[in-house]
Structures are given as C-alpha cells and as structure tokens.
Length: 92
Image (tube, rainbow, N blue to C red; front, top):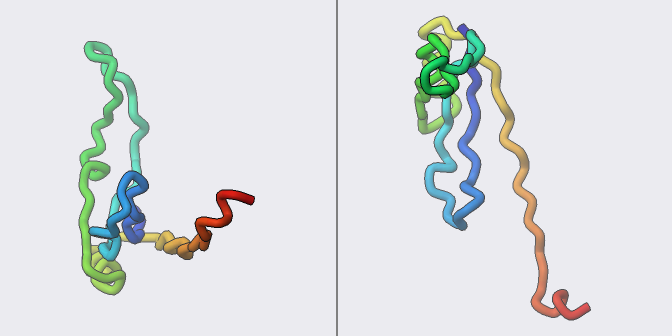
C-alpha cells in the first residue's frame, strides 16, 4: 500500500488561491481499471483510490503515513513563476 503526498495546485480556471495550502495524501492504484460490460464505465475493485485525505501541513501528512505504516513518496511543489508584463508590451 503506497501513497503520494502533494500540495494542492491552484485552480487554473480561477484566480483565487483557496485550498492551495493544504497537503493531500492519495493512495496509488493497485488494480487497473476495466470497463463495466453493462454501462461501459471504467471501474475497479480497489476502493482505496477513492480516498483522499487532506492535512494542514506536510509534517501532519507524513506523521499520519508513518503512524499507519503507509509507504509514501513526496511530490515536490513546483516553484511559482511570475510573468511580469506591462501594458505597453501589448503594442511592441
């Protein structure tokens, strides 16, 4: 049972930064998804992939994983890139 711990990214459709300070623990898939013969929807018998735990800090997430014997890997947060522009750049 392995999991990954990462910080939530900013929603690309909105300018707000709500929930971006939270850290998420998600379990990796252990079974591949197969199409349901009746509906055609993809699914599997692995219910752990539906579980997503949120924490206030990375220390809390790693402490939870260590306390419950979950092996994990950290996904580093990418650096924030600011593209500084001026209005005059539109006319060059």
